[in-house]
Image (tube, rainbow, N blue to C red; front, top):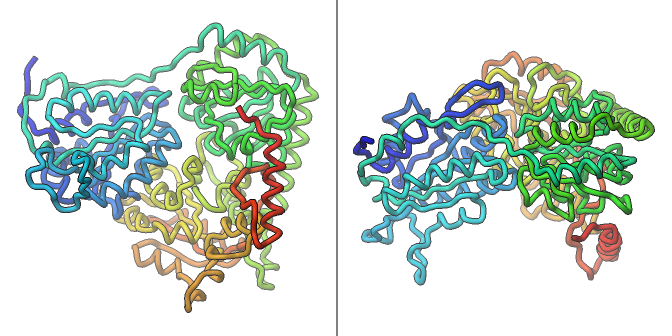
Length: 620
């Protein structure tokens, strides 16, 4: 075996270039198709130099903010269903810590993300260096230690040879269906520059095939026995359906066994919305049809879901006294939650083998017929609240979020990919966007990260250049992070961004008021300051960053603007004012902390309601 004399930075870049992967359609592609980078003194002279040397083999994309580019990478990796991994690199200090939030997004959503940040000198001779935060009693600590809680794999490379074993381990972690999440590498400035003899094997082509774990025979038999005894079974489709490319198997399983399907936020668009067995979105941001079925179900097969509180109604949703939860999940941790019967396996293979174990067993028609009635009620409700209200707008009533989503839903075309995140939009798009295609939806709600939307749209468009990426974002998230409008323009990744201005953080104002509080510091009208009547001109904000943009006032105008946006050659922003108090209803109980005592009786009453709701919780 030969060697090459390379720096640590060159060895890292060479190893990343050598990795290939299998896409969902069976084709082979680069595992790392590119890297987002903002350079500083901690990475420009070494890693930046190595990236420039291989700029065609590992393209480097310049972001405007480290958090934004790492969020874009996360959205890219999610759109590729974890089969490809965009990386992100930053300098030391604030550039690195800017990426911590994005790492939290990727960790919460089980998305691979490679982060490489500069670090202080391993020798410590120049200490303290620019941007170094010193810990007197623990001199080895740097700000990069902040990534430990939000990384699945974390390492600081202090000697060149360490990269030979550590980088492959980090890659394997990101590709592991059970452990998937961010991998972080801290690169001290002096170590990046060190040259060493790199084995040819480290730089040789390496192909990563999809690994699919099969279920244990005992767990499979137990799950099949539980389902075959069910009177009211329900399938809960989570994000793992998408990551396993198991949509066809989910459809076949549901149809063969006559079982209704509900979808989590991450699992939405696992089954087309028009299918008679799709009972809609479940949970706090879900609809009554899905939640009514969940409350009555005696066996729930949760496929690829981490069962977070918005899915389970803080574990109050499954009300059948003898309900059995079956956790079909690649991760044992998720498969066993709340005394679930575990079926630890890849979602696709688990569904296939469970279907074979069930044979021709089918749930009673009366149960699926109830699902049909429930879903008809759900769709009728959405049709009603999503209808245009141009006449009311003329009398001064703002357009609602439901009407905005409804306008896009009614006029969707093949290939549309909808993206949203925190604030009021998750509940609105989860209900109002009725997917005609599988894998046409990304709502980041694992970390509920404001600011994901525009950066995420940029990353998703990179992943799917031939699809129309439509971003729904509120004024609050837009003000937190909008600079990747400019990134999308200069990089040539056109998306459509709909900015809905409801005058502040309206959905949190809703929560504040619903729990007995008074409007305070959420809507701009309720904030401290002499000029809170000043509003941002989002059309001009977008134009200043090179976008095409316009402001509309009615649903009819929005629909016409969407036609112009589709025809545009660069990112197109549509801005409009929306109602701060009108929301899609449905949902279920959600536990939040409400004070036991207060000067307001309404707050105490709300606390008592929270306590009463907890009585229905599945606590262990």
